[in-house]
Image (cartoon, helix red, strand yellow):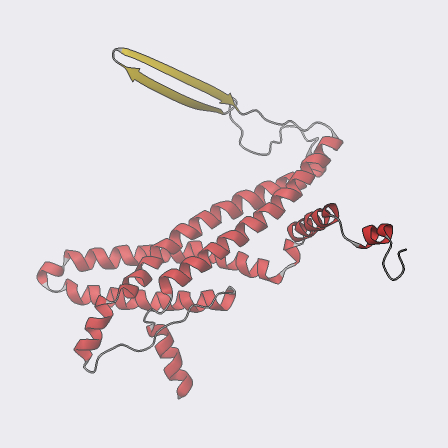
Length: 270
């Protein structure tokens, strides 16, 4: 009756069920979450986002000083060369950022090494009126914001995770605390007030954030397990920030004039 055909029971065993596919996706997701410290790109992303804070801070200081001095002296015509030098150097720094992003991250940000126009005045005008010139300058303070967020996430996540991971080694020591220590439990106040004629109706909710006191070795092991999860989550958060940084660099720096690339290209052709 079933000659030449697979039996129904055999077909059921051969066909993967929805549960098998769901468990497979869950297993692959867990493997990706746990295996993030073993990936080379994770540490490249970590170096990139941690370098963003000091580099971004230096960029912001440079722009604030250069633009403020140039604009302040513009009425005496002395500030115009200062502004021109500031913008030129900012484009060079943006070019360095373009090179750094394409070198460290899996992102391609193509530069532009020529300007339109036959005369120098025409090329200069095309540079000033090109919106990609100003998006490249805008990228420098954006780099500082991304670097600041990445620095806070890295310091908070890694320091807290490592402290929790090492709890089994020092949980029983007297007078030793991990975390934010205050004289009272932190409170979060949520308030809502509605006015109607001469009547004011309000609602206020207070949430108290307690603390977890570790007094036994088993509790310390549980906290250490949470520390491992926090460390892995921090790696993933920094990878996400690196991806966001690469996307922003591609949006703001793509096809912009890059004097840094012009210098590198001229040296390479010699």
